[in-house]
Length: 159
Image 1: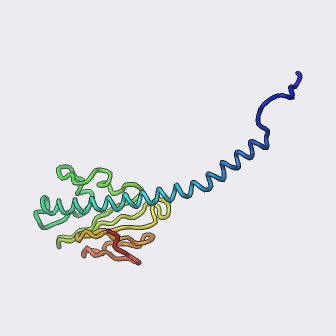
Image 2 (image 1 turned 90 degrees about the vertical axis):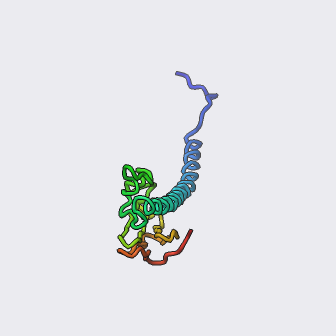
Image 3 (image 1 turned 135 degrees about the vertical axis):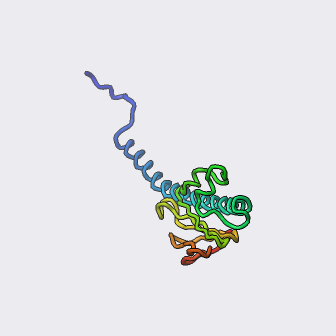
């Protein structure tokens, strides 16, 4: 078979240059994409805590007969109550786990923690009956048992 010196195509060096350029672009873009995903998960967690706070107020005024808050997050999504969606009612949404702590003393606290710290989120959040959402770096925020108080290190009100 006779080779034709006028054949068109890419050389191995040209293909390697293209692969290297693609790898550089990916190395720059992927960390930014992951940071954007964490920020979106955190925004979703804050929004979900707002929803839980509104649902708790409605629950207290109706089902709780102006006395009690829902004692679990699942109670807010229970059949017949339906104050939050079933995904949030299951206790997990957008890379965050949610929990509600309540007592008969008309106090509650809801918290949201990243399911995988550093991957799904960098901060944890909490809200109590006053409606102020607090954030803490890492996973250092908690609802104090039975008091509705939010405790942790470096907590700050964000909303």
